[in-house]
Amino acid sequence: MTCQHCSIIPSYILKDIAESSNVSQTVRDIATKSFAHTAAIHHARTSAQGKGFGPPAALRTSAGPAPEPLNREIYDAQQRGFDDLPGRKVFADNDVSLQDLKDESVINVHGHFQKVFDFYQKVFKRNSFDDKGAKLVISVHFDGDPGRGYDNALWLPSPNPNPDPQKPSQWCFGDGDFVVFDNFTNILDIAAHEFTHAVVEHTGILPYYYQSGALNESISDVFGSMIKQYFAPGGPQKAKDADWLIGEGLFLVPGGRALRDMVNPGTAYNIPGVTADRQRRDYQNIPLWEDNGGVHINSSVPNRAFVLVAKALGGFSWEVAGPIWYASLTDPRLREAFTWDDGKPIDDRWEQIRRSRKTFKFFANLTVEYARAHWPDAVEAVQNAWMEVGVLR
Image 1 (tube, rainbow, N blue to C red):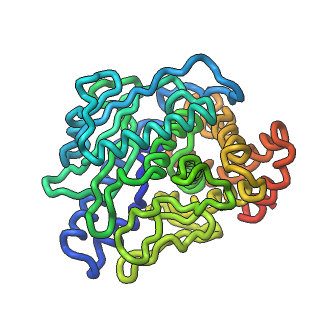
Image 2 (image 1 turned 45 degrees about the vertical axis):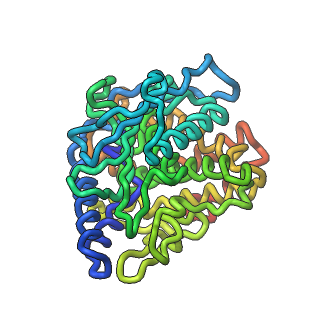
């Protein structure tokens, strides 16, 4: 699989909160259990990268076959964890008896996933996250502990590469801790970020280490931000007018503007005595034991490259910059970079890691190639952006 699970909150933020003496014991306890869950699921799901998933669909510039209608199933996890997922079904598009929306968290994800599904279908002609009309399974009030409160939202691939009705691939949303973090269902770009992890799972193979993992996170930020701009309250935003913040409004405490600032990495949050933003403009050499080699930290590099391209081109980010990134993501060569010569996904962790350290340049070259082939007026902007962030020379 592309990543055993992909969550919006990096483990180092949870660790910072768990060890801080400037928050209550209750907040520390919630951060501690959220951190433990994050670590546990990383170790539990160790199946091979990309196992069971076919090659990505070819780039389309016009509508393909009639898409399947949106098929959501929303569950209440009832403060339970992984072993009890997905939980009690409370909404289904294909069941009129389960369409009386009352729970605010259910209402939130119902609306967010409608928007995300529509965006991918209208802009990229993509039919659900797998491009085959897959059902969307979403659990809210995810926790795993009798005490209420969980600090994360995540994409959780099924342990079975074939469809498993008992353990489907799905998204899980915690309620937050009500002090540092708000409810994770409140924010559209968090849902969009996590949905995009599922898209990545079914296109390129981007192992969750070092540069490939950072690109995995960055692509989710990029598409999450595009979706936020597309559905901005005042109408679609142009790239020059967007704030390029991921998770804006999630923090409930002073000093927390957002989880990431794609324009000015390292400035999204600074909560004295608790935690501070570790992203920087330049690539940082991070050991594997910390954030899987910096997958959330170094995502700042390709994030800023995309912003530079989108702003240089003007207009809306999903008009040219977005399609260049999507074409590069779905190019079979990105997948082949992490397969053996016989086409099977690499199942050797250290070989994955070795190749993952070269992913930024590989992806950057794909974006330049697609710009040159389909959007020649964008070539200079794409090249300059990757040079500015230090990936191309």
